[in-house]
Length: 80
Image (cartoon, rainbow, N blue to C red; front, top):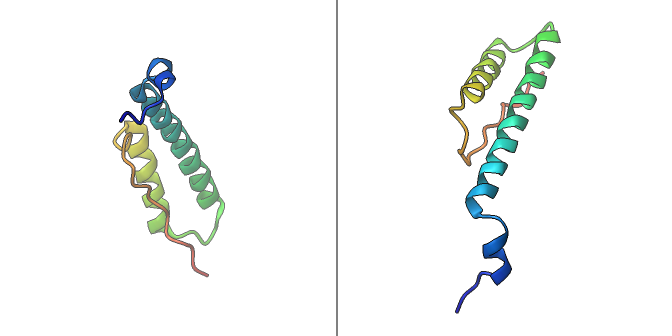
C-alpha cells in the first residue's frame, strides 16, 4: 500500500522543501538574534553572560554552523 499521493511525487521534492525551510529558519534566527542583541545593548543593567551568548549564537548562525539542526536553543529568561 502506497501512502504518498501520486501528485506529491511530481510537484516538489522533499529535499527542495527541506532546504527552503532551513534557509527560512536560518534567516529568521539571524534576525531574531540581532533583535535580542540590540535590546540587550540598550539595557543598562544587561546580563553580560547572556549578551555574550547571543553574540556567539549570532556568529554561529552567520557562519552556517547551525543550519539543519532541529534543536532550537532559547535564551534563559531574564531575572529581576
